[in-house]
Image (tube, rainbow, N blue to C red; front, side, top):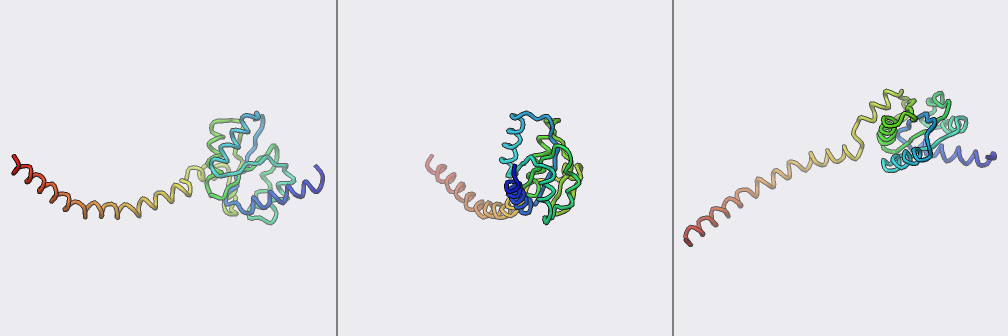
Amino acid sequence: MDRTQKQALVETLQADLASSACIVVTHQSGMSVAEATQLRRQMREAGAGFRVTKNRLAKRALEGTGFASLAPLFTGPTAIAFSHDPVAAAKAAVTFANRNDKLTIVGGGLAGQALDAAGVRALASLPSLDELRGKIIGLIQAPATKLAGLLQAPGAQIARVVAAHASAEGD
């Protein structure tokens, strides 16, 4: 890899990191191609990205982002997961790490704040942004649904009484 390719890689990685809300730093060793492909697929489905990085280039890409304090975590066979959703990358990484011992959570960052491995696992236990939106919409719609049911109830009761009276007269 020549200097221009390295520079392009650093710029791309820096753009991804700068636009991310959450970053998870992992160590992955001994993973087969099939396992790595499965991990990347799970990350994509969760709305996250996953990259195996060269530590020196990743440290350079961290400069100027809110995650510059994570530079000491980049030692050994490192890969990073990142997402715009604050919990998507953490959930996908922790879920995969729980099933596969070859992926280890080292730490991470959320909105510029450094997290240790326990912090990343705690973050992964939170509901995602879409789940929270669904709960809020459900809470907002519940009173309207109950009100509509209450308003329909008297009319339905009157219709049943009229129908019962009409069938009784017809007998």
